[in-house]
Image (cartoon, rainbow, N blue to C red; front, side):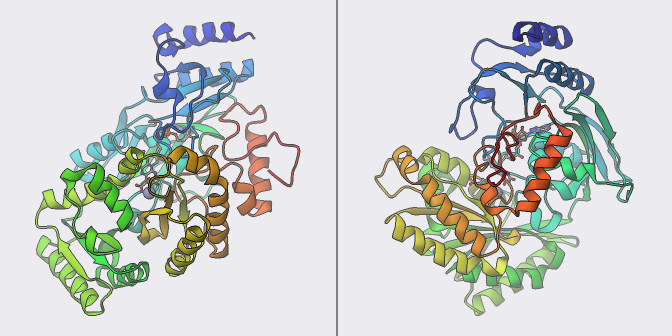
Length: 480
Ligand code: FAD
Ligand code: 2HG
Ligand code: ZN
């Protein structure tokens, strides 16, 4: 089938208004960080699962590949088309209904294009908690969260998107529908297809709806901000927090001085506490099942011990909700502040918590030796062993030329260190196309071979997001 004939078929399936080929399509064609820009054959906006299935079938029959897209907030260039003007972007944004909430079963079922914040709000309206929380929650979607197995700031207590998901409705690469919207917590009826598709970044199936776990809302929530002298001290504080707060510890974020200086520079209204006097700050959250007073007493005991043992040099407990929100706002603004500062080299890595201090000390030194004056935007979800270990050009050096000269060397240096410390080169953002070539160097080769085999079996024509996560086109098996 010719491309014009496919476009006619898509228009007949969805309606003229929902097949976009003209005008400014940059919101769909450019990635969030503005690193890459592609060109789509068309952007299609189906309204329901049957339409998604029909679009996939039509494209598969025509030999045209599809890039599924939610909020387009991904950070690994996985949700935009390539430059060939021959791929269809399938946006799930019109599928944004919360279909059901079952308070007795503690579940919520929503369509894939539901914005994360809307899911959180629907749960809140029902008096319950949907704990997934990311800085991009105002625009990322539930489908995108599941496709990337997103993490965020509550993983230390509630797990990442995978742990929150009970059931999925999926459109396959052939345009069939898997009706898997179960709310069961136990279901051992064979291979776990839900978990195969979660984290597959749109390469194995299109998620059209999901059933997610909800939780009782904590009776009290308290936030604290602590200055810590070193990463080692932050890790000591984490151990103390586990001991003192147990399951009440719902957030533990570490932020380096340079990361906070960027927030201070680009968002001066936020008034970052303590950052000038310390190399690192930590944001802690205590969600109590009892009372606000109980939460405060627990926090005070924790911080007293931390001050006595000198792993904390100073600390503030938020006095009220607005101060707590401001602390979180500062943390969530680091990504935006980096975007304002200019591109840097991002590394979303995870390590055993016990290895993090040594990793940072050694890798900081290696990077300084390699590129003197390089500035580290080091922050992240320390409670999960997940660092955003980002490398910014030395002061006065243009970001674009820094990336052009150093990106691959810096990646190799950092990823080799991650490997030595038995970590992962992608903790929560995924592989996309940005890390496609790095993955084979660090993934177990047999595991990678299984991944390629699964992709080829489920999507033999390469209809769904080809060239992302794994490449199946190379002839060099040793490479991919
Ligand atoms: P998109 O960007 O549209 O797509 C991401 C990938 O999923 C692509 O490969 C796409 O093809 C695929 N996809 C999208 N929808 C579907 C679907 N319905 N079915 C199948 N495949 C699909 N990530 C974290 O994990 N933790 C964070 O703390 C975090 N913070 C962020 C803060 C900011 C300011 C920004 C900009 C990003 C942040 N991210 C974070 C990254 C990003 O928001 C997440 O990866 C998010 O889950 C992507 O959702 P999305 O709807 O925008 O997906
Ligand atoms: C976060 O934790 C996100 O804020 C983005 O995962 C990380 O900007 C980054 O590198
Ligand atoms: Zn993160």
